[in-house]
Length: 289
Image 1 (cartoon, rainbow, N blue to C red):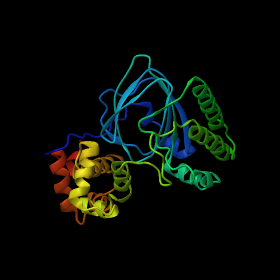
Image 2: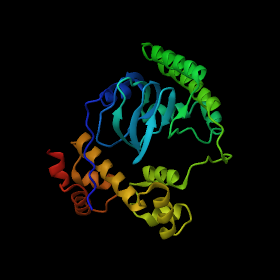
Image 3: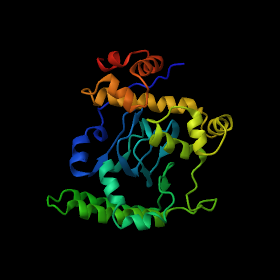
Image 4: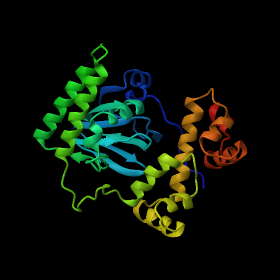
């Protein structure tokens, strides 16, 4: 069965700052809407979002989520996002970080603190009370000001402010119903999705991921389907399809053979068969649209 996952559209402010994010490492932007019925895409950024007012409805990793007034969310790169609708009064602020900037950030002294923060990927979003929201909004203001600084210390200052922001977010976190373990309290499906993001270029087989969690493929698939409503194999294929579309549209100087290799296919023909089965188009036909 073909998955109806068209390519990402680029008509939204969040999609039009690629060069700025890569150049500066971190950008703060204000958004008053999101594309309605937007095509799903794999986020290349690490994003911290703060809803000032209104509501946004989205899918995150193919699961519905809502983003309400004074909600805050922290999203890592590589996850599947699909904007669906916003209320007329929707306003939100986004801290958008390149992968390189975030990796450098993790190498600072924040790394020592980060080891004691088992989970800060907020899906669904964390709700802030009025005072917490006021403080966090001020942190966004400071970071936005820092981003306008034109000297060589801008990144160092940005990382200092960001470190404070993340530590405040940890202090504002709700107490989980189930006590966290040292490695966090992710569901198996959350860990599975992170594994696919990390290893999709190595294997597309459910058995590979089941082995990572010391489970049989059949039992692993049953657990993933029970938690998400989507089979493990379908999740993997959807993810690989979106990665393929991103490479084909964003890296046109890359050959289909190179794309196939990056996606973990043993040969171009296997990739072409997979892609046409999923989209109805060959990689070359899709790229030429």
